[in-house]
Image (cartoon, rainbow, N blue to C red; front, side, top):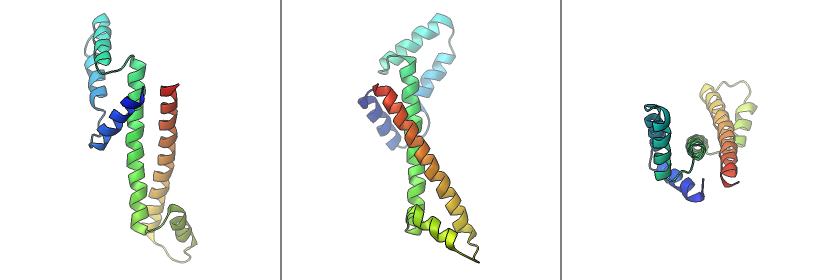
Length: 136
């Protein structure tokens, strides 16, 4: 997959699409046909869409999912940073340093923020792996 294809995927995601779009329709369409006809139709559709193989389609699709998840978890991290006007480390330190107080909302938010941060890092790694494989 080239940089232009990745740019198209990012633009598509910015427009608010959350489903798997044309790639999902291509896969769904191909599953309703049989034998050589399916293979020929799938190849024709993929070539027309700018893909050179089903592997390239799946790689593009996986990158699109990874970029979508990156946006989701980045948004969650930004939400908590804005809500508490602190970085994650500052907030975690403050919540852990509280003695004798039970702030259930803050403790829940810390758990959610921790999960979002770990998920963000995981999806960043996966997106980078997909990019590296695409340009190799």
